[in-house]
Amino acid sequence: MKTVIFDSTITIDSPIGPITLKSLGNAVVKVELHGLEGPGAGRRSGHGSGHGSGHGSGHTAQNAANPTADPSAPSSVLIEAAQQLSEFFAGERTTLDFAVEPAGTEFQRTVWSEIGKVGFGEVISYADIARRIGNPNAVRAVGGAVGSNPVPLVIGCHRILGAASNITGYSGGDGLPTKRWLLAHENISYRDVPANRRDAETPLKIE
Figure 1 (cartoon, rainbow, N blue to C red):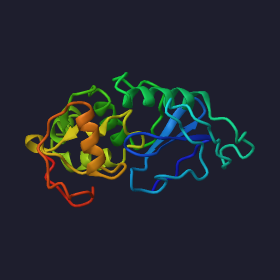
Figure 2: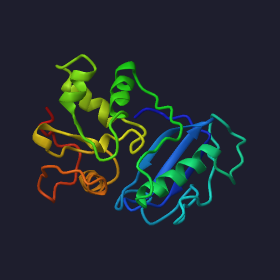
Figure 3: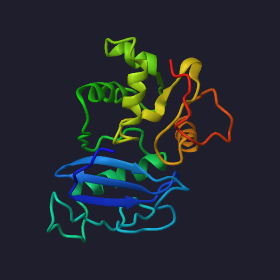
Figure 4: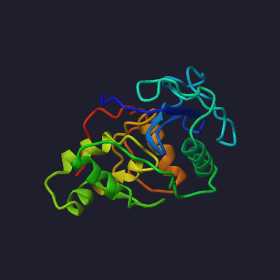
């Protein structure tokens, strides 16, 4: 797993479980969806807690990037991100436009850029992305880049479906239950897999 360097962090509550946001300077570098059943669900350890408004109290990480950081206040970009996410989950916002700087390879960033063009309520397939980046045979590689997206929701990888609108794995939160919630939130239709399928690891056809 790639190490993420950050100097401020905050955790907020959401309908899909706690979400931890990490920033470096003036941009968010990591969005972690813990899920309703994952680590951090129902508890707050080492992070600020978000309240209904999405603001909450912040906790600034004291790490190698900023060992003397003030532990009492999250960065301004985190405050903005928390507010936007609160409005998104409340149905008051369809665009998340706070600053992000996802770290990845050139190929990954190219894929993420294409995903970022897909708006609220829209979908795209893995094959569509491969064609758009000029490499139609790279469907599997596209799938790998999608799974490595460090800022889900902002770069909406939940909006990617497989062949014939089939739902595919999701690496955030509780896996497919989280993806189903997000798709329903945006009124996106899809062909489902068995409801007891939670994981994002078992290979699925993604062409």
